[in-house]
Image (tube, rainbow, N blue to C red; front, side, top):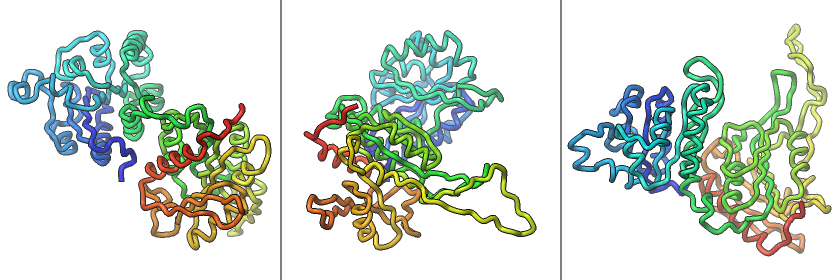
Length: 422
């Protein structure tokens, strides 16, 4: 199922320039196709030296264009139509050379001519040596393009193909995919209704890791995908979204303020420091226990004797945020990840934690929930009378769709309620 429903049916024109990062564009094409996008590609002369037209055509399932002087291409398509039949033009990798051509209006090949002729939004993913990126000429070109409305994702810091380390790595395909969705999303562009504008929301996501010694720790299988999707959904509706997350490979959701932590104690401290908020969604899979005495050095196997690990209970973040008081969020939503008797355990957790809603799901073997793309959830809402909660059974959905649906339910609930006082 698509991570970004907004991309289904969209047409992307991908310009691949001449840089070693061009290999990442192949993965980007595959991911776009999985989302239901039509992808048409333009290769610069340099781009064709790193990835072949045959490979790009096979992945995009469309013809690849690279020759401005092709009589056949110009008579059948032409750079004018090519530049305007897409919903979005993406340049990945965007080399220093191509960025300079874009900024100065040069049009001496198909890639630069197409970019000059387009009337559609443009997103660039720069990739180059760190000194080239930092050069005043490149930074001036980037500023010029930004002033013209060209969007940018990256570059990232890290090891570069030239053997140096610094800022210049092209953003990863998953990051570019999220940026493309944000550009094409009317809500992300501020062109749609934003029912949560002016509201502060807090979301926890991912696992926590509890150290045993400097190299070992206790954790769980949470990927953070669902929590990040909820944060994304809330940000799309205009909320000032604070995402407190444990270690995860998920890209930061656009429009969120991300706080990275490792342990449950750190997560609780970050949550309390973020108060007051209107809504708190505790989607993180917080480790229930931690080691009482963390070893300062790596524990060694000594004559076959096993170390004894004394465990103590971690702080209960959901129950702490749910306690009555001046800074209690107006709506507190918890998660119940269960492997059996899902609704029964969720009902008990809702009463025990004193939160307002519980999102229950089955994470047992064979469900594929932990680390997977999809989720089947049940939304339990506490009743004023204190009896059994009302239950909504949701169908099997992508985790992004679950996040959007929950965000909409939250927006409907908080409409007309007092705002948090910061």
